[in-house]
Length: 202
Image (cartoon, rainbow, N blue to C red; front, side, top):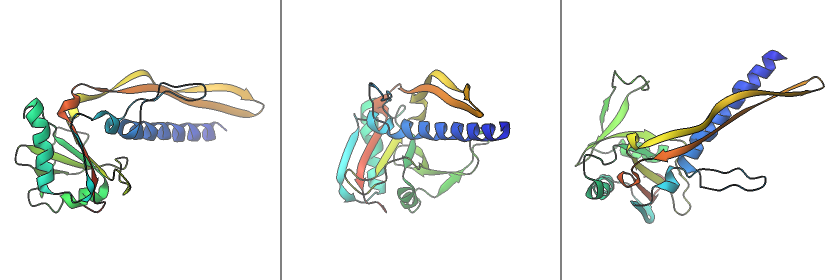
């Protein structure tokens, strides 16, 4: 029984982490009500100063990426502009075809990197490029999203870090829960950009 409880606890912890990751990207803010949890605003809902809804079916291009960089840089300066491009897998594949995006590197000092990271050299700066499963990729309005993020301007602020708590037994049944509370902290929203409406395949 203990082994099964540990297995279910590990599974629940993984699901908690996956839900957090989804919320960081796509959650919408809610104050909470009876029977409804309060939720934070995710990145897609937060980046509004430099949000552009492109015409549905617009092709993602190098011109588009350079325009995204310029939009933010014209506001916050090139030393503070976004440096990480996050987008759905299909659009990530499109970026791989860009002539300036063929470089790959591994930063040996960054232990988080387990494989080479694609780099796109825009007209203004060097961007790391990541595909993410939770970035909106649906073809329906407003269409797939592309996020330009300044990584050091985003943080997770924990009210309660996730912990496993054993609950009272019911007969022979052992129970437990994974409980935690966190919100997304953004330090310079205007340094980031978001665009939507692109052709799902690029």
